[in-house]
Length: 117
Image (cartoon, rainbow, N blue to C red; front, side, top):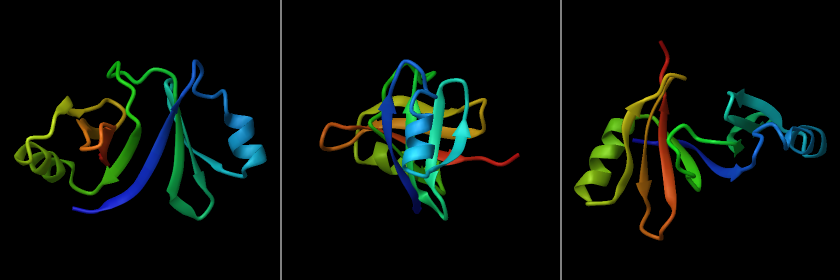
């Protein structure tokens, strides 16, 4: 299992609220936008990202997201270590499979694998 990106998550009433700052001031590209999240990435460095989230459909506020190539394996290892699974392994309608786990320093991690159909 390998992590391909680690993304800090910021929360705002409007997920598009930071667009001018992230694109015009910092020069980031808009990598993904759904009704509840906008993700920006550094041009040519798609592992360098930041997300602005209005309301995650889980109802939770993960501190960061980690993109992995095998979320099922990562989930099994978290369970084997008896870590707290805060949001169950779920296939989301926007094309990701993910779960939330409490890390060992108290943060809430969104572990996600993008699925292609």
